[in-house]
Structures are given as structure tokens and as C-alpha cells.
Image (tube, rainbow, N blue to C red; front, side):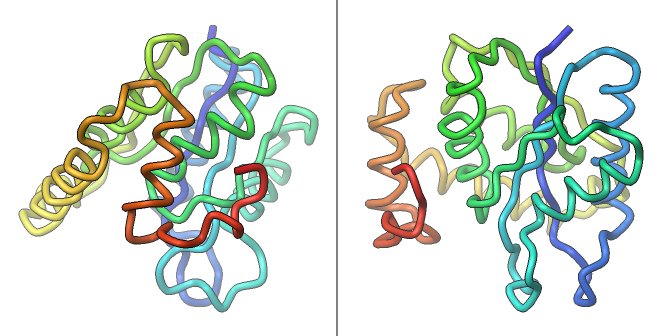
Length: 193
């Protein structure tokens, strides 16, 4: 058994609805919860590219979806700060995993995203947290442009965090706010830095 399923958000539709892939990720995590594989759910995500006009964060919408599907509020954590996968790893670790003494997580994403997610979460979480990775199937795994974008993003991650000690949250946060294009100069926007 794992303590929580960290479910990574996906961009919402323009009208704010959760698309099929987004719902598939949530349903996967909710099924893990009801089958007893995890004792809680962690919903991770702020606003994605293109949904900044919406009032609620992706994490809040994910929580609401889980509540409608019978998960008790006391078993749901929400991380509403991250704007990308690196931020999801950093802010779930800082704001949920460590403060709640969580020892084991299942990270839920999509198949085309899995390699990058595993590399990022292994680096940020280090060896102290037990990790398992799960993905939902999509047709995007066959898309060469998507696969190329994932590889390019992974290379950018490795370059940005080169020389930073794996699992050293303070050093990782420092580099995040110094060099990551989505977080440079925005330290004050992220409570508890």
C-alpha cells in the first residue's frame, strides 16, 4: 500500500471542463483509492497554459471531481501552485509529502509523459520516498511531435538542474527560481518558499 496517489493535472478545455485524458488520470487515481492501493489522493496543478482565465486551479477542480466520485474530503490533498511537471514534483514534496510524513507515492500521469515524470520525480523526491509510476493509455504516445516535445523538455530539465544534488529540496528550489523559465523571479508568488 502507498500513502497517496499524486495525480498530475492536464490542461483543461477552454470552457473549464476536464477533457478525457484529464478524467482518465483522475479515474485511475480514484480507482487506486477505492481498491485500497493508496490511502489518499494528491491533486497537483495550478492553471495550465490556456486556462489562466478560469477562477479555480486545476488542483481544485480535481478535488471537486474526486468528491463527486465519493472520495472523502479528508483523504484529498491539493497542491495548487505548480505550473509544470517540475513544479508538481517540487511543490507536492514541499507542501504535502514532507509535512504529512508520507513515505510512499504512486504518481499518475499519461503514457507519453511517463519517462519524463519518472526522471523528474526520482530527482526531486530522491531516495527517501518510495515511488511507483502509473500511466493512462492515450493515442498521443504514437504522435512523433509529442514524443519529440517530451524529449526536448526532458533535456531542458536535465540542463537546468545539472550539478544540483538529487533529493536536495533546498538546492532544487533555489535552481527552480533562478533558472526555470516558468518560475524565474517569481519566488514571492509561491507561499512557503
